[in-house]
Image (cartoon, rainbow, N blue to C red):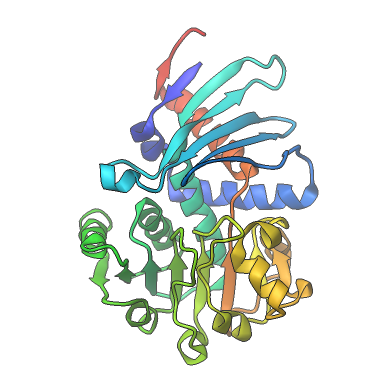
Amino acid sequence: MLLLNAKEVHALARPEELVPVMEEAARLYEAGDFIMPDRMGVPQGENTYLYMPCFTPSVHGTKFLALFPQNPGRGLARIQGMMLLGDPETGQTVGLLDGGALTACRTGAVGAVGILHTTPPQASTLALIGAGVQGFHQCLFAARVRPIRTVFVYDPRPGAAAALCRRLEEELGLEAVACAGAAQAVERAEIVVTATASREPVLPDDRELVRGRHFIGIGSYKPFMREFPRAVFQEVREVLVDVEFAKEETGDLAVPLEEGWITPGQVRTLGKALSAPLDCSGTTLYKSVGMALFDVLAADHLLRKAQALGAGVSVEW
């Protein structure tokens, strides 16, 4: 069995390689050639444990995550966990990867796929709402699929936006500007990425502000979580999602559908958009809640790459 820790996962996860893998996952989702039981979530107070199995003809795996919202205050990542890969022929465990690092990288790649298919090729400015681990990875992967020059960052936590701006400038060479509010960030950008666990919209309910911008929603993954106000849904012609069950799983779709701000016919999966492109001339919205199919294909790619390069630690099991 091959072990890949967080540092090794990050070193192996090249955006130019992972983005096509996530596109392939979107196509496989449309083809239906996989088994993916419903994601099981076990709440423990404000914390959540998630169990996500998925099986394709060539890859078997399960991701186990622990989501602890208070971890950043402890100097730890909010997401902890591991990804297990098994041999489809024998059931033997062949790989164990750091689950937090895998999630960060594959979600960055999923966001980048959304950007590829919902934004104009020349888009060069990005607003980021939420300066956590995922915020960094959204910028990292976005900068590989669009000529991003400037990132405007807002986070209500004192010092969080400024700290991320320094990291973006030092590690990615991007111009990064900490903003005093979400509106200030959004009004200066073409692409707007939300990466929070908010229960209320993190953007102003202002149609003039959101009109003509391109929104990528990464954070909300439960029915009581929302990042987008009504104004966004009043402006979009259709909404792209990664999976059909996003319509029930996230408040960013469940609430607009229940309130009639959009109709079910306006919601389309990303996999369908790969063969029938979206019109990016107006306001666009891509909402991701994630799925285990992304995880197993990303993990399989990283494991194979590690084997070819002699990376990781091999142990007898």
